[in-house]
Image (cartoon, rainbow, N blue to C red; front, side, top):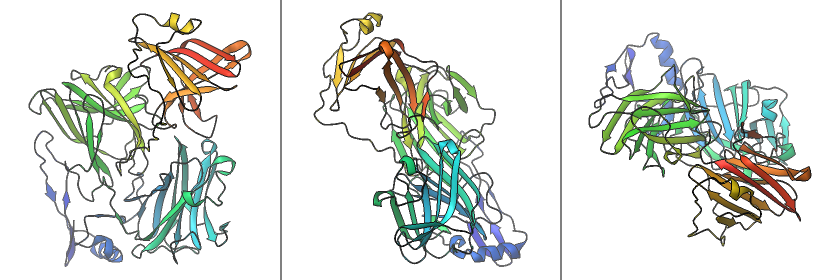
Length: 528
């Protein structure tokens, strides 16, 4: 809240609770602003954003002084076009944007001061294909007839680009006033966005098709509507978004503002609960996780900390702990932890616009330990600003399923995997010519994957390609197998996959007979 007082400015700020194991207690401080004239004039410039009666449904996008150097933004906008979203923060002279899309092509953000259309407009277009080796971010003029011309006088500075997990992100600063574009923070403007079609010309600004573009009219850059999971002021336990898992009744809720995020994680377990974030894939490692537990009944012996999860089940507390406002309660077989953390820390970054892979787990006792494969899971690309998860493609209709089949045996699987003919217990035939057979015991699973092709076959698990773990295999001369497990990073680039090393597969076989390629292998149920 900002109170306008004659003769000075009083800043009233709610500080973080000073007691973690009781109801939130706040202390209030006030100060008379020094350099009153400078501050007063700055505030007058952006009176729309900073008046006492400002709506609690909008976020203030303007800062006094230099733009933040810690990577934080003040305002966010999520579109319905291929996951395109943009964030921004401004001061009296400049504005910084971050634009991202769930695409492996260019992304673009533009402004049309005449109408809500692609032309005539000034657009910032950027891409960084080939792992960032070819970075291009520049100002372009969009004219009638789909004419896209790079401006001779460029206004963008501090440009950055990253492409990871099929998401392209560009960032840049620009002056509010430049020879080709003037952005008035308090007057509504038409904003447009687009992304490329991918393929060989993914980084070439060109006609992108009507499905890859969009726009919004009358967006004011001094303020912005809040995202569904966002509040304008201090965080509280009034959570706005939630996610229910299928792991021991584990659920988590959250609420965020422009700088911090607060979580509640609850599960039907007499032990610890954990939630983590992996920027690479839906895997337990490498990830940053919050693991918490407490004693029965009262909120004592609270242990809620941040950990680094590494290969080989290595769980290490972070040196720089950033959690605050910790709370925990355990009643019977239910454990609930609450904590807040900055969106950006030295060890991890949580975005309100860029989706992230979320993992979770539960375990017995109060100390982090191996929790078993059945007590963990994850979801790919959950958006913490909107609460929206990935779009799930429905299964093809008419596909036979192994209802009533018993797929489990006792003892080793090697005889099943190498027998001729094969003797798997369960099978699944898809509608696209791929056949899957399998048998498992309590530690491993034996697979056979066949397809009517003279090349490679692939098989994996996930609600979408990118971020999933998959087997890809083929036969070389003499039916020699080349079969490995990968984390999928791209749907268009054959070299954009991460090989899992060491290879978890054993008893690997490959045959190619009459144009049918069959790959057989044994895999542990749990790998790290």
